[in-house]
Length: 458
Ligand code: ZN
Image (cartoon, rainbow, N blue to C red; front, side, top):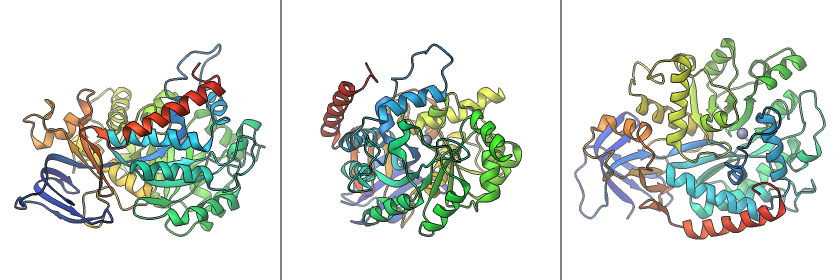
């Protein structure tokens, strides 16, 4: 049956009671009616949220999570982590990419993500040669999405240079090498996979790996309206190199030389001056924030409070997948700000002073825009993506409706997501993904193979 009767559902305008949800065979919501009469024979739920969008992922990095937490001889940094990640990426096969992505998607779905944007830069074989099918590895990620039910935005990544000023790629970057034509070709090859559960955009990796001219060429070559993502100012060193090369900071450079609009998602827009904060907010682009990865890599903190005050749009991503939970991303997004400002309750507006509700709804709006898919709310015509919370958990027992998101985001570590509907399909039931056992078995096999072929994890 394609219907659910919900006692408390989070709609775009806030919590509503007795909401009847119906969806069609294609997976789109066809009815969202509050204060409805309970129909006979329809399944019921206590608390329902729209599924969250994960706007930034490198799926294969899931296999590295927790394996790079040992101090080296000198100070460890983003750049020493990246060397380890490169060694890992050098060996991975298309089959292993698919197995790792499927495991990741199962975990993300179980924790409440129903959409994910894959920033996909591993395009070539281990020797640097193109696969017979140029979209081979992206198609493997799509297959993992199909098998697990995860909604995807595939973003093949333009990666031409090792640093500002068109520095030649290093040998360990040979699997990432692409030019604008390669990326437009991969996007074209993925065209038949587009549909309710999958969109295709593109991503210049960064202004280190792609020139301004290439970024413009890619943006104009991609069909209108498709999402464009870029890593922009993750590290202080990147900002310094950008200034040394162009006389401009990375965000300033992008904003001044490329037409950045609502198609764009600026990932890790971490190091900004106030003019850059204003420029992003004005452009309508989404700031892609990945608090657990940014913390893990020692990146820095985004000026969230100022950005919210300017009406900026943002969403969350799990990036390197040290966490697969939107609860943890949003909790640390808020906690990072509290620690910096030495005060409580930072992420809110005058219209929405409840921090949990503000964060969930704002991350949904920004995430949906960045994904370029019909997601992000329980609204007729959008995808039927929703989370049923465990109403029998002590944290939700007898709690007022207005406190549900506060409990969900800021209390404890149990996963309160019980069932997940994604694109009109129940993919998680009673806390378990319907394909979990088979997916995890393939992942284990992939990890054994990778351990045998690399020093990572030994
Ligand atoms: Zn990234």
